[in-house]
Image (tube, rainbow, N blue to C red; front, side, top):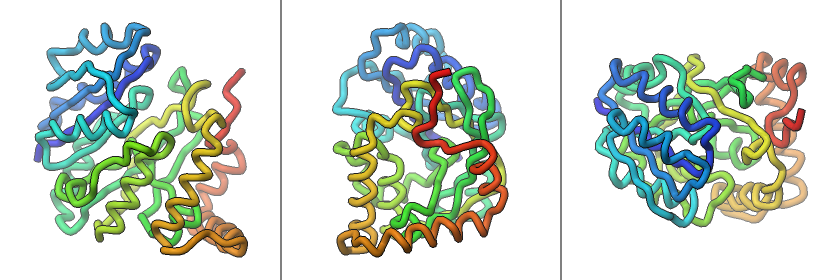
Length: 270
């Protein structure tokens, strides 16, 4: 099966080459369709992208209405039966694409498959492990379900069953897409492989707290979308319980969190 990977790029010259190489290095193992969208970088990113134009199937240099719009453009051009997307500061690990294709080829009943991820810094040093969990809508509503986006791949058909990425979402567009897939009945599974490096750096959304309000709004909106009712004060206790149960089910994840620290809002100034 052909797999389409979309990378959206905007002023990530420090990392974009590592991202591209991590994808193209797997071309010998899979039937790859690679699409790179750059919305108007001014830091030299476009020169780096053009350096690899022989390996990249489609390069689009044009403005868009934000990351979600760029991803929608990319997937509108995709030719694969399996889709994935990789931000321009993240990396795929060797064998990830083949592992995803092999899994979805064997498990024809599965629509979305996720591996785990290593959280890495600007120098590719591993900070900690991050474990994906099978999508469970109620747990997601209570903030107790993690799906590592760069380690997640899905069938074209299940993407087409949604409206695509929400262009108004500027902080967690991948999470909303996964929720929308689950609401259409998509079947999610998790494997034990570590398929990607999810990068934290000083200006990344996850490391920064600059979108705190947007993240809170997103969480409230997803709760209402999933549960069909407004968030209440007592839901805070259910959220704590669900998060506790998540760690009980995966004590290794608890150890990673306690011994190596949080992901969101992490201080990377040093």
